[in-house]
Image 1 (tube, rainbow, N blue to C red):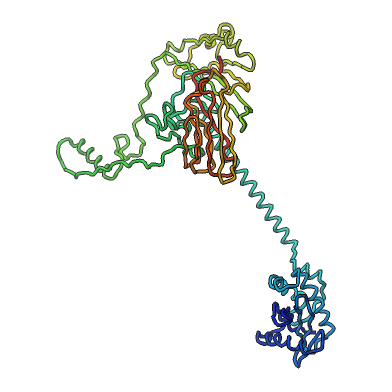
Image 2 (image 1 turned 135 degrees about the horizontal axis):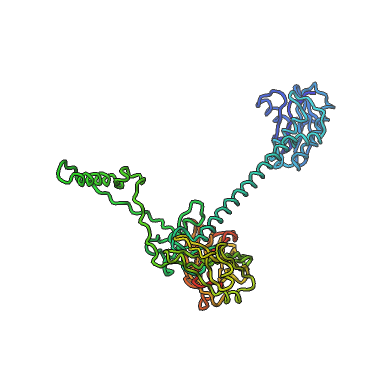
Length: 520
């Protein structure tokens, strides 16, 4: 048998929807053969085939006045042609799902592929079943599945590695932030006595993360400070908080008025001439120690004035607290230190006395005290005097920690903070925050509550106790209170900000200072 063409026709055979040729035929001949089929079918009494002088039409009616048509040569075996026609009649609804003009047009290429599975090039029938045709059309490949599985596994491993790296970077940033908070920023003078807490190792120094309100709680920095007050660390996510975006003023350019040869005061004139030339090019002037202006021979910074007192005693406490989002204290620890620094020869022979009987009676449960190994422990246990063993003097100018204490009770947190973000469902998140003082005798100063917003858009403040500052560069916000005491034992903040993720507001970092100690 030789099948010239296989087609699906609609409108009682007058409209060709799909036609596949298996021998070389031009378009005009195919269109002429298909156009002659309705006329031949209408005048013929045959039900399954119609013959002309050149070809034979073998057809089968389908649903919705549609026909499946095979055009074969007259020498083709009519029995085999009918078997091929019945096989194609089973394949078409299996491919399209339904016999309709819309379904035929939607699955035209699939029908052509199915015809190619049944008939080869040249119009010869393949020995194939409908199930095999269906399998071939699905083009199932075990190698392809293995390749896809390998690709997915690699993508999953890369995704896990990316998440692990992102988590490690975030942990390093948070560790750097905690270190900055514990060290109190770069530089700055530490208080002689007092307490700092929630990761703060000292009062906010000029340029540190929490020095954004300056002196006295006012907005802006104090003398010699930037208006934002936040220092810049390369790997600190909160480093640029509060920085001013205004460009720094350029140094004025000085135009040299010319050069004059000779004259008195040769060296002075020469220096003035060089200074003028450097100023004309907007360069910094040099000096004898550094003639090229590279900073290699810059004059040393003047040493700070020596303390006037014979000795300096620093009593410091650090409060480290971890809370849940609901304000529940998960872990809390107080670490205190007494540091002695001898400034003069007379200070090297001094001793420090503490009221050991008072704090031993009031700090019995959960408190632990330890002296420096070089301190005479017997004298300390007997009279509360902290002195070096054998009457040795203290070193001059070097701080020595002589007494430490530790407390890990849940009541060591002077106040708690509660944060409640809620998704409003309209592209905005409403956040309610509040703090509550836990110790009536505590006076907390310079309280800064720092947290991310997850967006650079400014928050819409609805109500606030205290002050706030927003940094659009880093998307951070700081809630500031000058004093938290029994007279100001609680406060709240409510604002809205654009976003959908309620987890972006955590973790919340808190720093504060206090002139009173937790240890009596």
